[in-house]
Length: 143
Image (cartoon, rainbow, N blue to C red; front, top):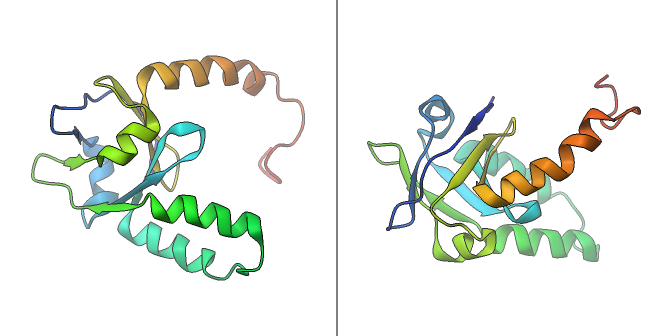
């Protein structure tokens, strides 16, 4: 499970060093794609394949499903971390997420998310109060 918050830097070649504690999940390759709220989702190769297999079960007749899969899969890129645990974020994904040098990487359970730090801070500030004030069940059976 991927957990925690990390603040790596984006180098001049568009690479980041992945947190060492994530390397058990990412050692056999990663898949990056567009995330929601303009972040980048980072999945292990295995997790992405399982996600894609589930997505393939959706009917192609539903427009929302087609739209989601087109956005999700057309932005996907595979990479293999190097010996320094670096992966290269493709220019299209860097542009999509508005990435600058300062990044925030969060563990989100089955994936990591790569955010521009200013975007993450704005999202966190806007969302934290609602999180603290939650008084109803948001995820069935969680609390």
